[in-house]
Length: 532
Image (cartoon, rainbow, N blue to C red; front, side, top):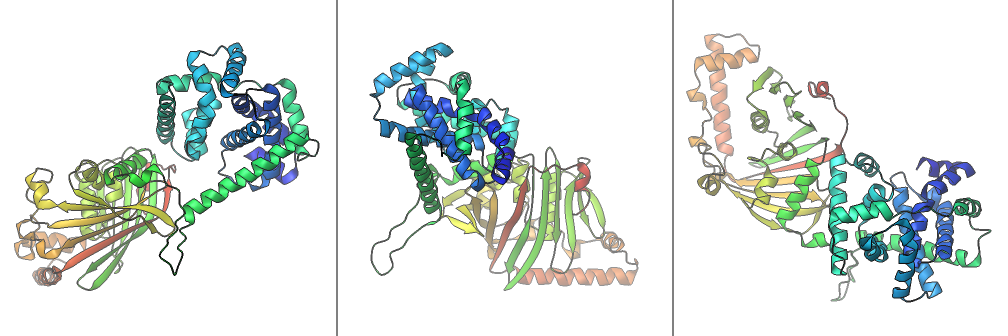
């Protein structure tokens, strides 16, 4: 996009000429496959670059230029075919096969090429951009990922999913093949060299914004600009509009119906797992709000995660108490103001964070695939009851909403949960999962405390604490260890225990919200040793 910016800012002819030389083959080939006429394909190519010259200033930084040009070429070629009333499909295919024979194409490509543009236009923009970058331009998966703002692994998955969509499209039309063969023939044949003189003439006419173009070319430009504007408007309406005719019994909803409207909770959870698995790193910040005994307790948190085993979760309670679970690759630690302790493993460290009052440990569990406690894994494997709710929003993020009901007694009986955890009751959780990126933006969990029995757990009560245990607590708080101090600490712990027991009534609701999500940022091990 740097060359586009140069042209838009300074009308640089050299920048535009470079753009044309780089992309003319892509545009010309897409046009030629549709119109089966080299002369008309040249005219279409001319029109596409006139459109680019006119719209260069409106393209944003995230635009994949080759994908944008490919779509414009398809729109322009479709308009050209309607205007020219070309020969019947069989004659067009015969002509295309004869011209492509010189490029050494095989039988599969001859069957596939007349259908390719229709198949490509049926893909979503991100899928189409990925295939254009990978197979039309020959980019590496790493380069595709960088262009799309994703990791190499995520780019690979997107390319594979898009190829599978093409395979299904071709199969329905009598062209049986595999995704590997489709990838191979598209790579080998999708872009031909444009005529030598075409790039020069395109540059001259396009820079003049079409002033020197033929009448038929200008008609194409006008028609395609209308189509592109209409397409953008249609998308905006589909995404944002639900128009209710107030005062009557009729409701008119304008929307885009996509296959994800039929996704099950298991499929949505799998998409979330795949989204986190494709990342090299993840960070966010947010809050947890615990509603218990008529009170709201708010905790703030910051999360940083990186492959293969680097993490840090910092938490701050309302009274200012702070804690962190972290690893810089050399062991797992739980840290408070009184010092840090080495933990057995990541799962134990995260458990201590939960005990501190920070429940924001679901995302780390999913990111690192801690399958025993990964809430998405429970959903995907059918170990909990699930239901898809009405879609919702967290802030301005459109989300799928799914419910998970975890019956711990049933799961323990089935061996999913270990014994010795007490009667923890039934937990109901709602997950708000972003439609665009499949990340978790909010979790709301509730449990009826009347069903919780902690008496059978291994948690020690103040009465069971020895003087040696209380001495360690005093030392961690840098307090003098005397008989009076031990008695005072025991009394304080007993008071806190009674207070907790009095609160163990009714329902507790914990709402966890994730904001300012950043992915695939480069971290070093030292970034996880201290709060940032």
